[in-house]
Image (cartoon, rainbow, N blue to C red; front, side, top):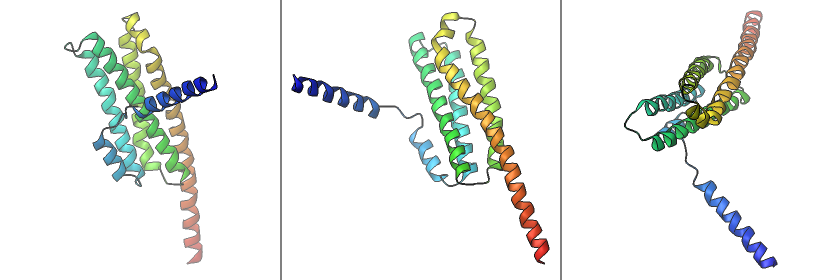
Length: 185
């Protein structure tokens, strides 16, 4: 009995491990290489994430409006594009946090991020509005779309707050450095 229970446990654990290993990465190899090259440059790296997220939203619109795609394929592709967008956007947000935690000056890098937050929120809301004409279609994507919208809305507030915090922090550092230079001369 113990051997059977142990065997079932090991089979379940290995099946879960295999399933986790087959998770699809939302980024292409080229995109990963570009991010690797910009690893230490907050502005360049965040702009790449913005471009990748924007591309997934554009893909979402293309899929929805393409009459050549079957409904089944369209459903799968829309789900994948929404999931990819959300994962990429979450990575963007995590990178903002990482650079901020390192003490980097993100004022310049955050401005395009905040603009993208507004753009992404608008596009997601427009997509949701377009879906509302078909209740079945709206319900199919409700969870994924809601997750994406919540991620953008939450992070947008955090990004604006961080920019205000950094404006004050680095303005004070600049003023202190200026006073020390003026007082020391």
